[in-house]
Length: 85
Image (cartoon, rainbow, N blue to C red):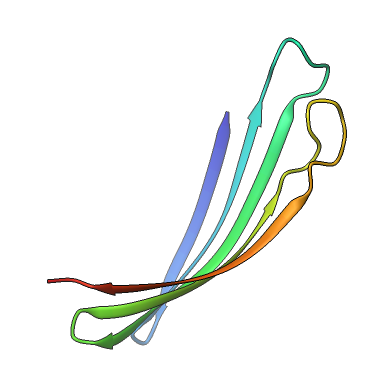
């Protein structure tokens, strides 16, 4: 099962959005469930007309694997360019 929570607002013409997600899976072969969480923050910035750029930062926490070992984490930064016709 999993869950996702997203909150957003506009400050002037900039749209801000933040979210957190959680997922958990079971496997009868292992003693431990597999879990992961993700967090992100993005800002939709209008450039001109229908063109926008959306920078995003995020963090994945893979928590422990099914054996109870730390599965690590990951940080990312991205940028989307978009033009609607």
